[in-house]
Length: 132
Image (tube, rainbow, N blue to C red; front, side, top):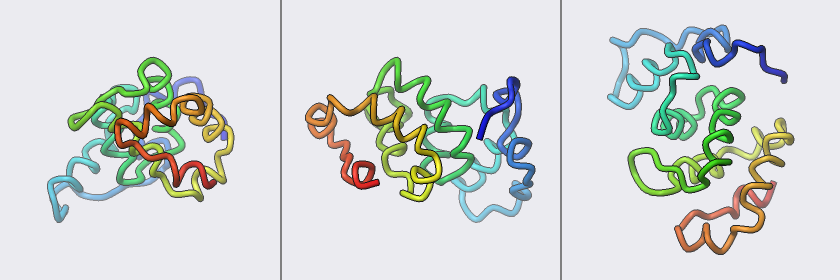
């Protein structure tokens, strides 16, 4: 999949051509936050927004490239929880996504390939990611 030049100016709903539903019909605060974020241009996402949405499996073809931009500058960049929380969620993505997006897997693997011990010291496991 190739991204348009202006894709960062679009929301996940626009990019996926999908409406995720009414904010007033959400069962939890987290679901409501995800629906709110699905309507925001992805270029305005914070690291925490990326961490949350990736953890919930939203917009991965768009949010993983954005995450790579952050992770390539600081592999331990932090959302709201701990150093490396964005990376931890990225590495925990379902294998099917990585199998369908090998180019992104290769980019993440390049970032972490020589840092396995350092990641383990931060309790960021790569085992699921490594077995793709």
